[in-house]
Amino acid sequence: MKFNQIITLFSLLIALSANAQYDNERIVSPDYEFEDGSTELLYGDNVVFRSGPSASSKAIDTLEIGSEVEIIRKSDEKTSLNGLEWNWYKVKVDGKKGYILGGLIALDHVRRDDVVFLVTAAGVNRDGDDYEYIDYKVRTRMIRADGEYYGHESDLNTNSFFIAASNNRGLDGVDNIFSINLFAEACGVDGGKTYLFDTGERLVEALQLSSVADGGAFWFDESVAFPDDEEGYHEAVVYKREFGESMDEDMNWMKTTIHTLVLKWENDHFAPNIEEFEFGEDD
Image (cartoon, rainbow, N blue to C red; front, side, top):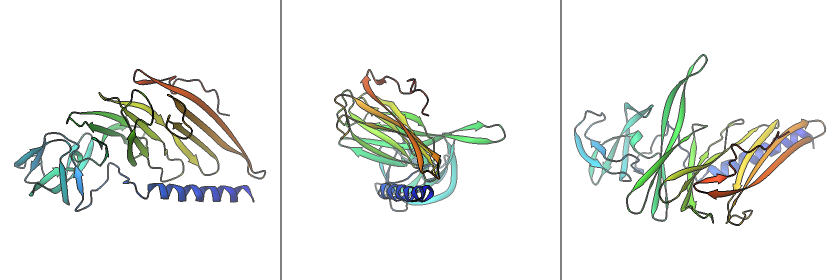
């Protein structure tokens, strides 16, 4: 089988696997629109529930973070919040109808036992050499069982992502693990993930991993195995870094370089720090 046939088959298998992976996930982005009739949670706290789709409309009530709202429909009116333009939504809360700005509603949420994680997006306007662009961020809040909450802002390497949460997966000093999984919809787009650890007092950005491929030319993938995972290591996390590239299509020659590193979670950070660790050249 020729190299290009191998790559085509490999790419097809990756695409099928990715589609299967995303089938049951809500893929969100700063442009995400809530579905009519869906029940969502508020990301904002002390949110003013208004009679009309503007910040000057009469207040109906004030709602706390995590409150449930039923989406009736999207309004055409928009208001800027945290560097982005958001539509207003007509919603129903406890039988009352009114309006809430989309940026105050969590793009998605996930429950883990007695806690709930919420996400929204933010943007920072940047000036490039010949153009302007928005540097997107994802903001996460975690509501504890006692109603207290804390949050964290992370870089968003792509516009689209989905979220997940689990227990500590065997890692001491961590209560819950939350992941922001980047949606790679095309070659060359980062499909990595960011891990946030809930320490019981705050959210800590523990790891930011990348996973990028460009057809059959090259691929780069970072992954981790936690203590309770099949490839895990007692009381530690196994970090794996893989780089592969096509060397000669006619000879079906591909070269892969793999690094593994055992990470210890100490005082709210990993040691060694993979951002500073000298792996040497991948080639």
